[in-house]
Length: 184
Figure 1 (cartoon, helix red, strand yellow):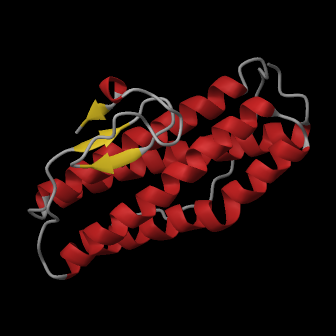
Figure 2: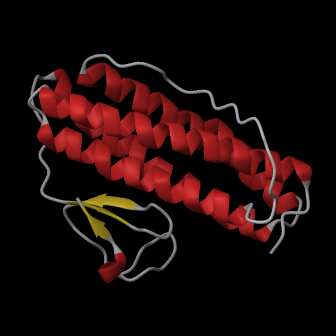
């Protein structure tokens, strides 16, 4: 399925850029959390980094035949602080995607009849809602100077759905079977 509308293609490129930056930022922040004695928060950052990679990969695949150079601007927190501050940056970024970016991108794709983009944006939007809540939970612990309680983080490789400790039988976003989830 080819992306026909320039606006949707631009939104896919923008989302790809943002997700790519989040992926790398969360890997870096995960290492920093480890160094501050918060390995579970570090693991959460790495798991959600993988989910962001899934989103970037989905956006990239929808653009598969739109070959050519493109400048991709992605607004996001840049830099690093203490884990509690990095978590606030993550929360702010996820909430921006949930409240501003993905609703506009999704509605535009829907309006323009871009089914592949619509699915990719929907997957990301639903997963980002969960990411914001998980980062908020982690920040509550970090503000008290402790690591979050966490056994395992599971991420769906199809849509980026992320859940801690209790793996669902099927992904509530895309329907993938639990055997497909990646474990962190």
